[in-house]
Length: 258
Picture 1: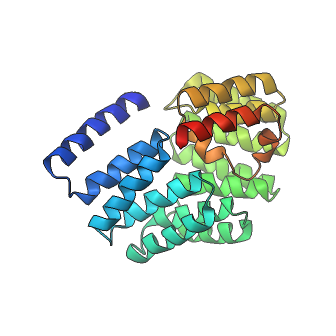
Picture 2: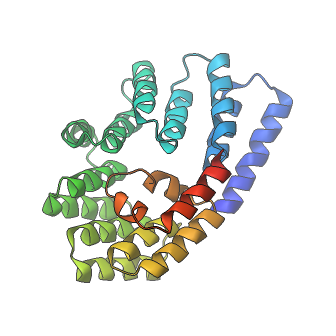
Picture 3: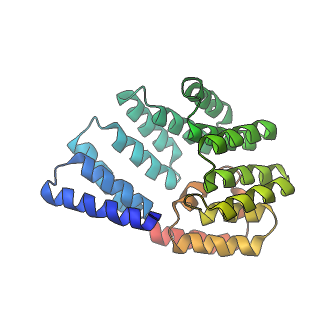
């Protein structure tokens, strides 16, 4: 089942649940998550805030609204929401990982690594944590460590294409065009799971293929690829944002997410 079909099926279940009982915090939170994935960030915030009103001690709602705040570039607010969620569920590896990821967006790289290390110490097989550590190390210019972490993520995530493409992005950030191209081609040819056009666009940009990169950014906007919301404003993405063509992409993102 492709992501669009999965979202449509999930949306039908959530709609039915809300029709049966509009006071279900879980249904409002799930609806908020789905709206966020469809780039309706204002609608997502409204639904998640409603979930919190109905169930003030619901950690997932705080977590998901933190993600929305991150997409809006409000990383300090996202950090406060993640702290609230972690206080309600202190043993959640997902919340601990997300806290580390948010520190990455805040450019607090040393703190991010410390936070993510705590997660991998107790959950060494949690692939997504290695994914974030790879991105942090890449921005710290510690490329050897970044590649090691990216390869761990690939192995633990069953070689899904997006994880392989993250390895390509790390290689490209390090200036290793040969390894980046090899990992990119493998990820695209294997097509294991969803492939984010925004992530491919970033890699193409770093490889100097800027026209193809912006064609893919356009595709990411047209398909409302959530990967673009995660890349926008992230460390290292300034290289794409400095291109004059980005202004039009940013304008369209603003129109679709408002």
